[in-house]
Length: 389
Ligand code: COA
Image 1 (spheres, rainbow, N blue to C red):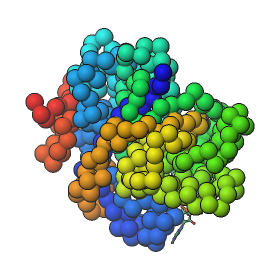
Image 2 (cartoon, helix red, strand yellow; image 1 turned 30 degrees about the vertical axis):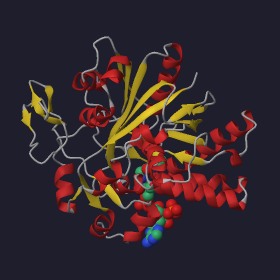
Image 3 (spheres, protein in one colour; image 1 turned 60 degrees about the horizontal axis):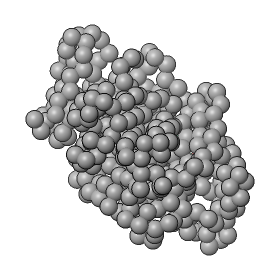
């Protein structure tokens, strides 16, 4: 029996800032952001969206009544949690109208946790093939204004339905993991933005990829030529390019060109959104599947997941014949329709998040077209609204 990703659907914001404009405002050469970092646009997440609403907005459009009836496991992976105790997944399950007999949990390990979710869901469905699991990676990447990490922000959520006989990607049981205590990126409880040793984290990322990918090749007696495409966690798209380039010497010249060409497809949508933390690898997978017309059924796709702190995993999946049916086909158009905000407006939205105080607060939702929104806080409880009701 095959188990894997049956559907993928993405949600982000209706707002973005242009990276060339941001570079100019920060007195940097635009090409540093456009080429050196590899980002063209950065999603600007308004105060009316948080990890919960992004997750619900990502999942709701892809779920049929039959899916909702079959889901008995919801894993929400995030490092942008909204409560120290209560799982974001409980709010999400309520907004989506999932059955009350569902296991709901929030998972955390920086940008890696959605992969843990996918692999746990894979095992769960293998044991309960009539059931489905919903895994959502949802985050708002915040490094702070005027910091080196600023151009590597962004935000959004990727929802994935894991089932038996999946439409999109049948997952193998071949993971190679690496987990060690590394202080490359972290966010102490008293910070709303991440602390990061940027250069160090980029080096650790490459080291982890080299380690798990080469171990995979040894363990599986595989060759880089077996892969149609390699996909990566993309905190910024140049990061994935560097990782890919680090293993290209293993490939023939023809295959090097092919892997680089597939990578361009795999970073196309991430280039327009920015960092997503947990959802980033899976937006890259979706980008590849939506934009690369040269893919075919049974192609082997490699996935490298990385979370600072640090944990890495390399695993694979095989493309299924009707994979296009499980994809968020409207995503490129939705990204193209977003509204461009000025750097001043982006800064205002960045600083307008719900304050971390006990006071009642109201958030202006007039400009937010998404179905699920955060409207404020009352009696120290976050208030969510379904704008369709
Ligand atoms: N044209 C083209 N490229 C240019 C350029 C220009 N005018 N000016 C600079 N660049 C290139 C640099 O050569 C560099 O490329 P390289 O890494 O391939 O050498 C890149 O742009 C970035 O420049 P750099 O000076 O290294 O940027 P920075 O010190 O401001 O910070 C990060 C870059 C990624 C370290 C920083 O944004 C960060 O800390 N991000 C968060 C951490 C992160 O995402 N880590 C990833 C692992 S999870």
